[in-house]
Length: 226
Image (cartoon, rainbow, N blue to C red; front, top):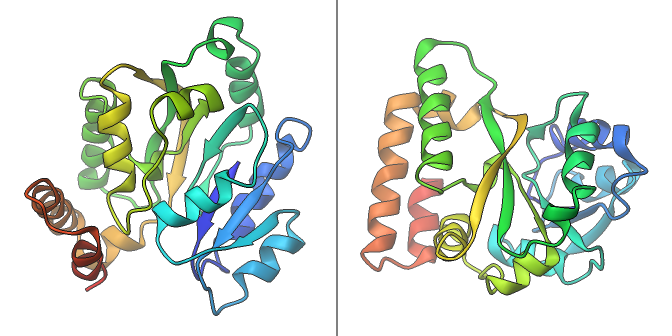
């Protein structure tokens, strides 16, 4: 398991608490800190994770964390995610499936849930489900579970400042398939709360369009953080 984090001291401990339910299932818990100033790294160690320091940026952080792992499976999660109590049984069903273990052409994603009320948020979740299942474009905030063989076959992640998840999904889906894990994964609603659901969705769509037109990930990150 690899979790990139940056100033997530108020959220990461909750995820690590969820993960404690499956201590025997996941041998490696790696938190990759991108230079936090709020004690994230200290809290990660207290929560039982091994901490790796890396340059800021999810792509670079994920690569640094993956490089320190040896397990045959990888689970990539964002630090603000929350897992339901039954997650160990669902993940174990995939890990113990002989067909899944031997496949280098499958990966699994969680069902996005945003920790905000309202019909617009529920519509967003439904659209993300369609995009992930039919469009084969799950993003990083949905988590990604895949075998190391599948990860390596696809060429792995790129050390991008932004869009590392979309870039990987596009490459992977050319010869592989993303499957729903059947597990809700709840993320913090701060991004949508700050600008509103519609404005945030439109903003993200413009960033994706700019990326496809050749805008650098560094420039996109500045726009994303504005």
